[in-house]
Length: 573
Length: 67
Image 1: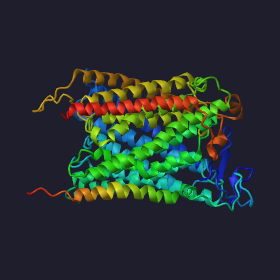
Image 2: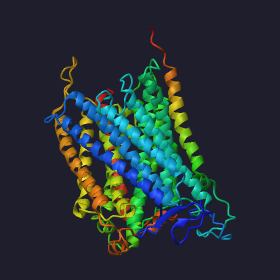
Image 3: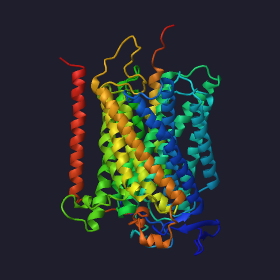
């Protein structure tokens, strides 16, 4: 076992570290640098991908219809790759390194491999982006065959995936080092367990990507004559949907992390929360099957097992987190003396702190919009109402943008002072940013789902199908929905710009966070809560129970309203 | 399953920081949750079997259209 010295180096490993003045955690220099570069790469891709997203929203707005068709498909492809893959996975790698090396108090395993992984990810993401921008690879995020992209599009994605796989290996190696060097006692902290869940799902995701993208690359350069379209779709969604399940696991871990750091909150029960993550590990990835629900030739047994019986167990995991996280906040607030009434703890929460407000809005929007719509899409019978309509992007904007992106934005307001050691600049903008972004992205999700329910196609540039031989009578309300989607998309773009401004401005121009600044402006209430094992151990949570009751009422009502819609589409009499 | 972390620190042979006796048997569920590589095996095997392999078996049974 290595011995730490007062000078801040590990004897035998020559690993330099500092002790974080806010949290008291050891921050190893090599880990810190890798977290920084991955976070910066993530934010750059968010900026680019977010800009493309605004262009897509303005083109879908019938009154504006900004881009011509070819440019729309190009921008839509670039938007999907930049934000659904690159922004999210760069940031998740930063989270993996934080949750292993820093929370487990140990050096990072094989930092050279971590750098190699980072360089492969940067090279791959740039290669794929360039391929799209060259105009020969407008195949959408899904890149369904027989549409063919340029070979360097597939090669870029493969290199990116290999880099991400290396990052996962470094993460698992760091877990081994921490265990071997006994840098923690007993079980890993819950946030680290959430990161383990994300890394496990990432391994399956990358393996699925390799299975399908390597042959597709070979097909694009002429070594393989044909790729079976349905097999491609099946295996591709093993990557495409599972990559979004990495997000769910990672952002739930981030929720626990923010609650612990800002309020000193511990989970209601460690073992229940870990069991919920175990349900993710076992069942969450099977939800990929909801993309195959209308494929003929696949049995109902396969469809219903994967999307209903198994998926509901994963949903149970989300429901557990959905009660545990607000419950942990309520318990921590009551412990801190905010005990007045049912919701006194909520009123007295630090709503002016963007880390907290972003976290809270992310929990609410993910649960109400993303979670409920996900269960509806995962039910074979009612999926048919909105399969492949704009409802699907509405759903995943609620999960990936309102859920994951907003949670990652929220923790950035802690990463900048704790890892970059800079105070935030433009504090007023930072305070309002989560609200502006949440309203914008909540609106786009809701209105896309509304338009999808009315039958609007998810990918088509011309929603009226004006040059088709079989016309489609688009209801007027759908045009209204798409107009509102454009307006709220602009608002989300403003929120994203505010985030970039604050984060980049703080990294470049923020005041160095020294001991005096830490004393004058403490930002962390629970450095110990995030890195140790322990439960709140109470269920005296009247506020949380009330909120959960409201959620279940909304869930049941919306679920059964869709069965009512179905009965009107296909009357049984 | 215990709600406390199992002991592992050799510097405290009788009790861990979590206050547990090291000789106490760790419940099976907790041993599972504390083993990231077993979890990795399960997390990759489940979707590979139920989604990928079963799915490809389903697709392989679709008859090919006559030419």
